[in-house]
Amino acid sequence: EIVLTQSPGTLSLSPGERATLSCRASQSVSSSYLAWYQQKPGQAPRLLIYGASSRATGIPDRFSGSGSGTDFTLTISRLEPEDFAVYYCQQLTFGQGTKVEIK
Amino acid sequence: QVQLVESGGGLVKPGGSLRLSCAASGFTFSDYYMSWIRQAPGKGLEWVSYISSSGSTIYYADSVKGRFTISRDNAKNSLYLQMNSLRAEDTAVYYCARSGDGYTFDYWGQGTLVTVSS
Image (cartoon, rainbow over all chains, first blue to last red; front, side, top):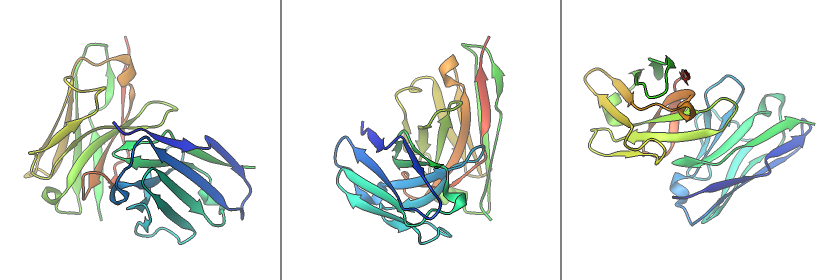
C-alpha cells in the first residue's frame, strides 16, 4: 500500500504570501492519479488539482500542482482569506493533511 | 447539476449493522466509478471502498475488508454501503464521491454521520 506523507503539518502564513505544500509517496506513483483537495470546517472536500498539475473546473489559477515519481507539490501563489483550510494529497489513499492557518 | 446525497447514518451499538445510501443525480450514474470515503471526528480522510461503473470491480481498505460491502443500482442511480460488525473506530462522517477514473474524486456528497457507541 502506498503511503502519502504531507509536510508541514501546519503552515502559518499571512494573506498575500505564497504557500508551498509537499506530498511524498512511499513508492513511485502515477502522476495521472495524484490529486489535491481543499477542505474547510464542516464542508466536504473539494477537488483542486488532478493528474498532479491540472486544475479542476472553477479553481483559480493561483493554485498550481507539480511533481512526479514520489515528490509532489501544491503551490498557492498568493493566499486569499478563503484559502485558509486543510489540504490533502491523494492517490486513492490520502495523506494526513496540511493545515494552512492565518499567521 | 451533479448532486450526491447520503443517508442512513445514525447511532449504532458495537457489533451492529447499518446500511448507507447515496442518491445521485445530474449525471449519467452508470458511467462513473463511485467511492465511499470517511472522516473520523477531527481526523483526516480515509478512503473506504470503490466500485466500478458496472459493479464488476470492487476494492476495500484493509480496515473494513470482510465487514463492509459496497454495491450500486444503476437503474436507481444509487450507491450503497452495508456495514456489519461495526466498531467504535468506524465512527465517522461517510462521504460518497464520484470518480471518472476510479482514483480522483470530482464530486462529493455532504456526508452522513455514523456513530458507533454503546
